[in-house]
Length: 117
Image (tube, rainbow, N blue to C red; front, side):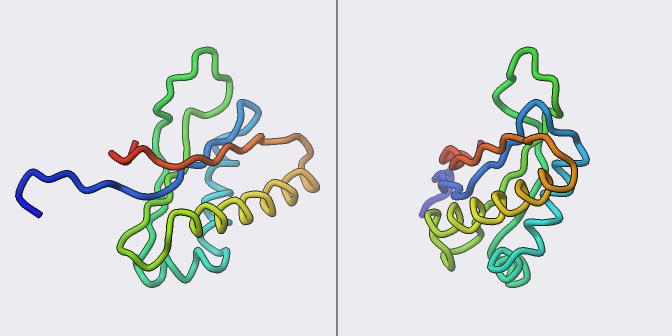
């Protein structure tokens, strides 16, 4: 690779629906950090989880304009595996939240664009 070459960023973005709160986003982030095998990837420094301001600029959005980005660092896990791990963890968190608080945070999971956005 030469200077100036662009390296594709692999990962997934998790966005909660308009009924979610900032506390929901942060609670989900904490949940993901403790969920196996995501916890193992984090402890091995093969994964980073960040809160970012939403990039889609949804007009009229009532919920927080925050999303979680799970970025693969290295080649220890595939994008398909990360997506599966994330989807399973988000589903468990959503079911738990629904049981305890009611409502549906309507999570969306999608791959990052190659530039990490």
